[in-house]
Length: 226
Image (tube, rainbow, N blue to C red; front, side, top):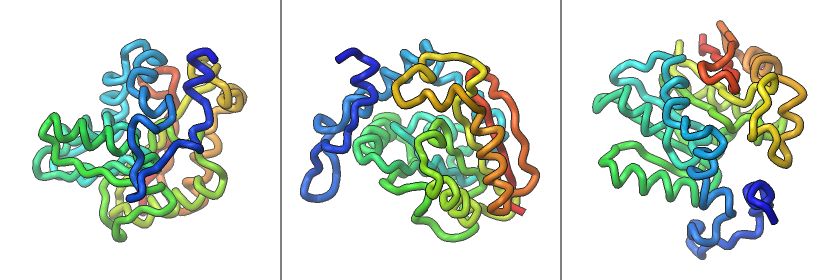
């Protein structure tokens, strides 16, 4: 089995502890080595890509921000630097081992960001809570129901005039990521600019705009809660 096959090997059989958490050594290969894989795919530019994503939404000191699908927490930890001590940074992910890594990062850096296991279509926060919600490199993993219900949930938890930003692969630029097994569909259509933008409008987002991310291999869509 080569590296690429191991990255996308089905991890559905990994073991869980009796308390519902996942030990990192039992997590799928791609989860245990996620940061290394991202570093490889982006040729070491992951941190810059996160900063470029943040530049698209112009975070303010005191903002309350959420990354729905935070992985190991790098984007939301970078966002925390922008919102400052008056702000709040939250990361959610469906993979317990990802959340465990994110918490470890936060602890090592003295971050006050919080992380929890949860899905974009069931966000454990009240209405009108966040100023900005990120959904970065997660959209292509969601099924149709998760996309539709997830955007409804994001709209619910956003404050009036709050924004959702969706970032995912731009198929007009061939990358290692679009060559991975299971990613062939990403080479056929720019799902962010077309599908995601339309779904955002359908659930009630306004002022939806799309474009090419500063990292040209990505596209983005940004919508606002009226």
